Amino acid sequence: MSKVTCDMAMSIDGYVAGFNQRFDAPFGDGVEGVLHRWMFEAAEENADELRRITEAGAYIMGRNMFTPGRGEWDPEWTGWWGAEPPYHGPVFVLTHFPRESVEKEGGTTFHFVTGGMGEAFERAKAAAGDRSISITGGAATVNQFLAAGLIDELRLHVAPVMLGQGERLFDGVGRTEWQVVEARHTGFVTHVTYARTPA
Amino acid sequence: MSKVTCDMAMSIDGYVAGFNQRFDAPFGDGVEGVLHRWMFEAAEENADELRRITEAGAYIMGRNMFTPGRGEWDPEWTGWWGAEPPYHGPVFVLTHFPRESVEKEGGTTFHFVTGGMGEAFERAKAAAGDRSISITGGAATVNQFLAAGLIDELRLHVAPVMLGQGERLFDGVGRTEWQVVEARHTGFVTHVTYARTPA
Image (cartoon, rainbow over all chains, first blue to last red; front, side):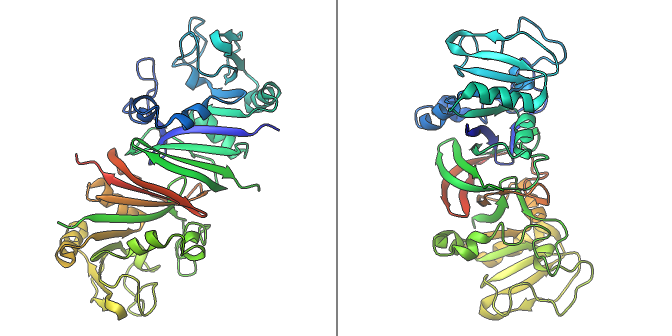
């Protein structure tokens, strides 16, 4: 069975995005450049962690991570990631609005799932085979999978900032136990990997 | 000028105590043994971090950390720590209820401060001399000092558990920037030390 992983860049106080996510502020107000600085300004010293983010065989993502739009689809919008997204595999996007799959260069295909997390999870499992499944975000989607006990390995990338407000990881997750697998810091981030303790 | 430090044992989701703190549950419901296991079951491998918690020249503590009582003082109550508390120095307890200082063995004296965090801070500075001042907890007191920008070094000791509810660190602190100084993990905890970035 596939391992289910989740990489989240968050603030010390557990926020992964600001309020008012929109086209010109994909991570919302007050977050730009802060949580993800380690990815762009120090890619080399964080190379291992960066590589692992996109090594899964299938991905699950909330609709609000795929698009700044809400409601009915804008068919022109095919994601934030340009012609060749970094996933190189199937990405199952949770949405209430049906849409044809969108195929991009380099092997990434976005599939739009209207049957909820259960359907997305089953389809991701079938697509991933022996490889892992990555729950990519945002907070609401990850919290749903955490609450359901479906994430085996949680990799937090904690930026040294407190934001005070925004989309908070862990909300509604309840009590869960983990084991620390790994922790290290580089200039702009502390990486901590947790493995879920079997219930 | 004294460095101001703060050591907090917290859950992955930022809780430092459960609800309903009381005499037979000093850290409230659902927390016993979980956040502080590393201190007791793995004291040796966490010896450096443990030593630093009590190396300050003066301490500031919220009343709810000193006692499970609320309202008027019970004069019989002299803290959770037995005859010889681990502080070996002056501890300034924030309270609305005046009380004579309480002297314990080994150099710990609890002083009760009714003039708020400003008065406690001034008295701690005077008492600490060149040594550091430690803000010991609980969450409300630490959050007040964080919000005021008075903590220079924040040492988080993150236990591998999500609690889902309780007294939350960081509430009301707003946006603050830090630098990662150190991070390491042992079996039951991840230690991360942050230094405040000057505003």
